[in-house]
Length: 151
Image (cartoon, rainbow, N blue to C red; front, side):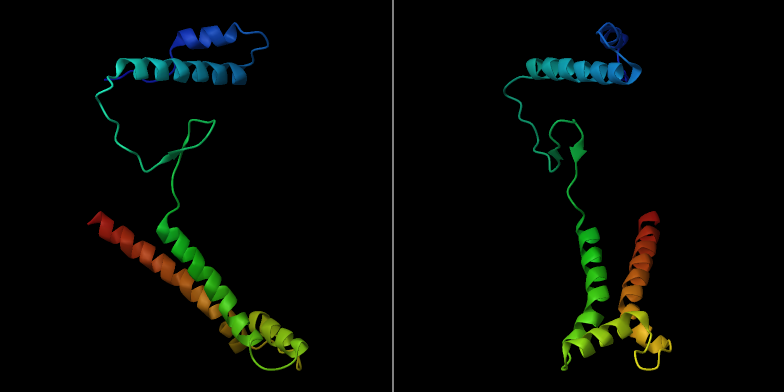
């Protein structure tokens, strides 16, 4: 089994550098360890071996691996934005002057009727219903997906 952790010789060498604090000594020690490990690995592998191409791309400067965006998350995000914007856009495309369109859009999202000043739930449901529906559908799909994975 491979040994895990930072060998003490790298930490001791990092502490000996001038102006070493706990945080920067650990940083320097890990950087030196990674650098030395990378050199020894590349020199010990033969040229005939080919590395399997990885779908992950390496972030510059940190050694961390960046993963691609999930298609599921992107689709859900687009659905949420669409469900939130669509009712207002539909109301804004109706015929009339700009002030009437703006009033209708505000009525759609707030539920407050502009002439009476009363809150009417059906107006708020018209604006927020699709968004709430997408959010509920996302939770249901995640729950079903979790159930299917556990089987």
